[in-house]
Image 1 (tube, rainbow, N blue to C red):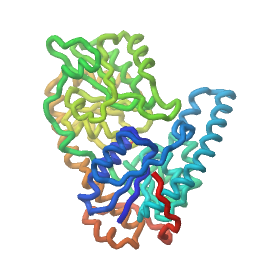
Image 2 (image 1 turned 90 degrees about the horizontal axis):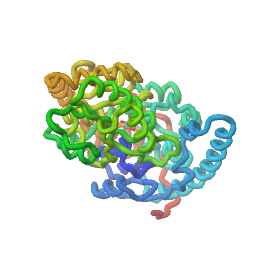
Image 3 (image 1 turned 135 degrees about the horizontal axis):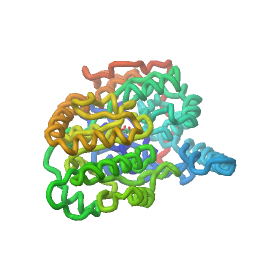
Image 4 (image 1 turned 180 degrees about the vertical axis):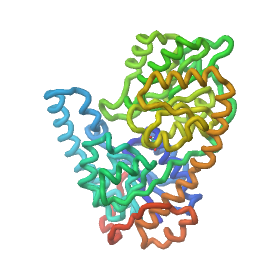
Length: 438
Ligand code: GLC
């Protein structure tokens, strides 16, 4: 079975890190032959190559890279709508051209299955109409993405099946894209890399620009890209409440605006200004985006999830839990599916800064509770977040999407995907056009 993965980003956000974990685990799960197409060189491509994955770069024009439905919120009103319409038109032209090149590249790569990672890629791959069956790996809450949801709906008949990273995402897929087969496959992570152990709080303080700690401190942090819906503003407001109660608490916002999509992210200046307005100067450290964040989780005493939109899965929750850290997470969508409240994490109503602050203050003041919840979190991570399990389930889905590839059938062990059916009638064809590109 030869699988070609498509990524719309070359940076290492959660979606790309999950893709890398999948690429690393697939050979162990059944020996698939893997290739990756990315829009530019960068850490994703470098790491995929280091794993022995064949890579190809198909440069994506800026009009397409930067375009996303978040641009709609940039300038409301008539002028904003006009501007949005203009950039949408430019992106549509760029997408059509890109899809032609993508189709040629895919033909030259001769996949048995094309597996796209991310909304932009789902659209581009469907427009490209590859000869091989197309599988969409759904990592977004479609109900919050109306515009792109509509475009996907039109193109969904071209996809053979989909992987949803949580039951919440699968429910959205079924509602927005009726008829598209969907399998729930939870993301897996590297449980050796993300494991309990001593952290380095002093290094964290230093990188975050905070003075060296004197005496007892409790470090509370949010680790996320600066996508606005990841809730850095909510987190800072909750921190201000905790800071007033607990002098030992210090706070960290770790991450950065790593994606190119216009209008989707906070800037560091915005968050700095908010921290100042909240009186948090000297209590909040800003830690730049880390490509290998395991040490960061180990250096925190409490990890926060503050997304203000339904979280499709919440990889950082799984990572922190695997490191044996207590997590406080919004009780919503994929985030809530991963944990059991008050046992291996604490949950609060999404968007409720007072409830978040209460949970943080509780954990900050109770080391035994932190240890108990952290130990239960590690046990849950071991039981649920194995990358090998994820890879086996994805391979099972591929085998059903491309049933003619006998190697695929034999590659799938007992761990085949448990639900859904990638079973539309489709004649797998071999591409006629072969062109080497990138
Ligand atoms: C996306 C989702 C996040 C998920 C990650 C990996 O970034 O927003 O919830 O954890 O993909 O699947």
